[in-house]
Length: 292
Image (tube, rainbow, N blue to C red; front, side):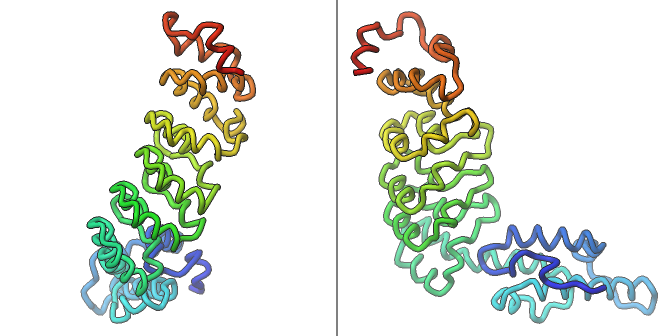
C-alpha cells in the first residue's frame, strides 16, 4: 500500500495545529480502512492470521502518523509501537502548551512571553474544549496588556482564527465593549471586520457590538467596516444593524440607516415601522435636524 505524507495531511503536525491535523489523518486512515486499529486495543501477539493482519494495519497506520509529524511532534511518539499514538499525541501536544494558557489566565505576560520564546508556534495552539487560542482567553479576561503583546506577535491570518462558535477575538472584544482591544486588533488586520460569527446569530463584529449596546465600539467599527459589508449580497448585516440602531433608540444612527435602507436591501420604512412604537417615533423636525 503506497502513500505519502502529502496524501494524508495538508501540513505536518506541530504544536499549534493538532485539531486540523487530526481530522486530516483520521479521514485518510478511514479511506485506507486503517482507522479501526487506532480505536481498538492492541492485539496480543499470536501466531494466527488475525494477529498478522492487525500487525500489518497497525504498522501502516503508525507509519502514517510518523511521516505526518514535524520534528518536535515526531519525538513524542518515537518509541511508540502502536497506532494508539494518536491518543498519545493528543495528550502531549495539548498538555505541553498548558503553561501558556495558565500564564494568560493569571495575567502574567512575562511568563507567557518566556514560553512563546521557546515555543513560538504555541501562539496558534487551540484549547481542545473550545478551540480558543491564547488571544481569545486574554480578550475574554480583558487582559489588555497581554492582548496587545499577543497581537504584535501574531500574523493577520492568526487573528482570523475562530473558536467553536466561529468567534474571532475581535468579535469577543466587540461584545465586551473594550475599545482598546478592538482598535489594537483592527490596526493589525482589516479583514477580521468582515468575519461573521458561526453561531445562531451569524453577525459581524459591528452588528454584534450593536446587539450588545456597545455604542462606543459601534461608532468606531462603523467608521472602519467596509460599506459593502452592509449590502444585501453580503448578508442581512445592514438590516440587522439598522434594527439594533432603532431598538437602541440611537436616532442619529437610525436616521443614517433609514436613508441607507434601500441600499441595504430594506424597503422604506419596513423596519422603522416594525421596531419603533408610535409614541417613540421622532418628529419630522428631529429627523430634519439629524439629517443636516
